[in-house]
Image (cartoon, rainbow, N blue to C red):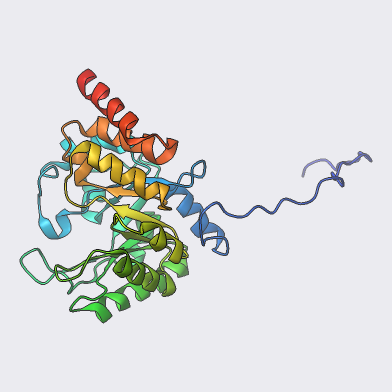
Amino acid sequence: MPEADVKEEKNFHLDKPARSEPFFLKGSNSLDWGLKNRLSQIFRPESGKTVMLAIDHGYFQGPTTGLERVDVNILPLVPYADTLMLTRGILRTIIPPTYTRGIVLRASGGPSILKELSNERIAVDIEDAIRLNVAALAVQVFIGGENETQSVHNMTRLVDMGNRYGIATLAVTAVGREMVRDAKYMRLATRICAELGATYVKTYFVEDDFETVTAACPVPIVIAGGKKLPELDALNMAYNAIQQGAAGVDMGRNIFQAEAPVAMIQAVRKVVHEGAKPEAAYDYYMTEKKAG
């Protein structure tokens, strides 16, 4: 037993009100402590932003360009990612368990690129997600797609499971070939996901009125990198999205298919976390590329 504290003098700091600070992330103030803690593994509290490295493409595309050998091509990028978005197969077989930042686990799947992609199901059990100590579960949501209701139901089931154990749900808004990628559609898709409980949403950046998309969505939005762009164009897209209210980027091909992937992810970090202008970040990229 410890000795009793017999000192009379105690300082209760009566002149200082109790601290009650809001959580740094949009729409997350009323979440449980464990869920906020996991979100802090995805979004950097200092900036409120995230650079997610998306390497989950193989779940429907197989060994696509740049992901033929994840152990060779991707592991050098891991130290520069705030969080990894990937499948449990790649997580278990390749990612070192010493990685301590957030893991966003792809939780939906089913069809390959040979089939109708909107026909997905939940493909991960919540108990396995807990075993893997993930921060978030990602699910594809096909607003306007052939299997819209099914994909929304997938998301709401995942929200319920995640909330039970303090794991975030990332709703990934998929855009079908027949859908127009404009602000009106993005407002619809992201708002539906947020209304039905998604912790945060991933969507595509659009040139016109993207700020209305982020303003109308009550939870954080991160943008998808999409198809491979020239490096300066990708940095411009990231910068414009952040300036218009995005809470980060989830880039894959625009990083691991770049000519110098390590330099590129560092340049993206400068845009997202430091507010660097695209031209300055591109200059940094070129310098690092030459040095490497």
